[in-house]
Length: 214
Image 1 (tube, rainbow, N blue to C red):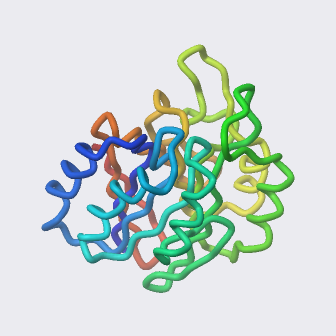
Image 2: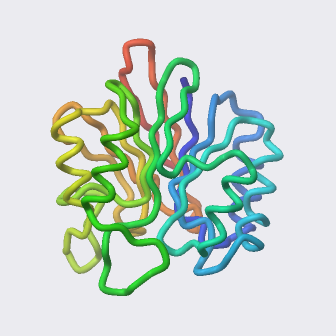
């Protein structure tokens, strides 16, 4: 299975159109969006970006980020692409999603306590599933801010350590684009789309994962 993974659009329609031009002739199975479709705006802003992605006529699924308006989740649900607190299967691979971030000092729109993150993942996850998150796991290359602080979710890290999913896709920390590992789990922050970044992820029948960052 081939996944195009994007995150942190922050309302930049021009970069969405740029991405569509880049990938419209590519063969892939699903496009996954790891949140922050808007920059503290609502469904109208989200709809403008999503319409271009939906025109690809490929499966698209998304979680909201901590900077998305409360009604963005309603829009994702109406479009049939919401993966927050849900599980789907594509080509025999389960994908479990959870949006928003852990608690921040900034009181952003979608923030959750670690026990809420744990509870949702534990409820929906089946062995071998991959995770689509907005928040990264704690103390990794992909949760490190420009000040050097690790700000990811401790609950997500513990969940990964215990369950060892083959892949976790996340975003949230714009400067922490990259790939890391926790045990056998590969974790990728594709980097913000508003800066022209995305990831192509291949998963073979043995659930071996390979990641290319752009």
